[in-house]
Length: 158
Image 1 (cartoon, rainbow, N blue to C red):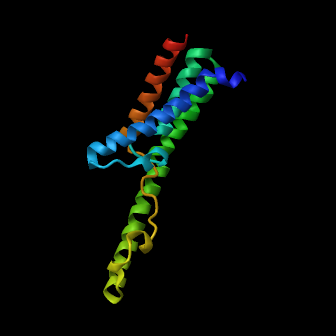
Image 2: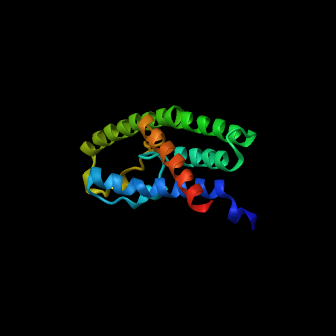
Image 3: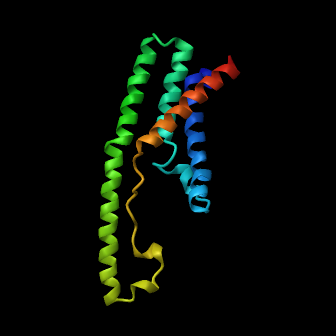
């Protein structure tokens, strides 16, 4: 049961949970609707991936020392994850946006021929997920959340 006392693990998991939860009120401010699906979705502000990897690296640094090989491994792992979130995954989201627009345009054409507007939106099509990656600012604030959270947890626990 040592994993129950694993500070880096819990810091990272808590960072994910908080980052995912924070997306709901931030989205509410922007859209005036509560979207509880954001608890399990990818993309958006703040990046839970960035929060997790920075919380993990910070917690390992605080626990094992910032000169330890474990910190070096977790820091490089975090950099790769954050780079991927702003690069490959974000561009995959851009591609999904274009493909969804193509589907929308095609559906407009079909609607002129058939009674497409009478169907429910969920019956029409399933859209590709467009919020796969993150804008750099989302990664920054996710990373900042992870660092601050780990430092606060370390102060509270130790």
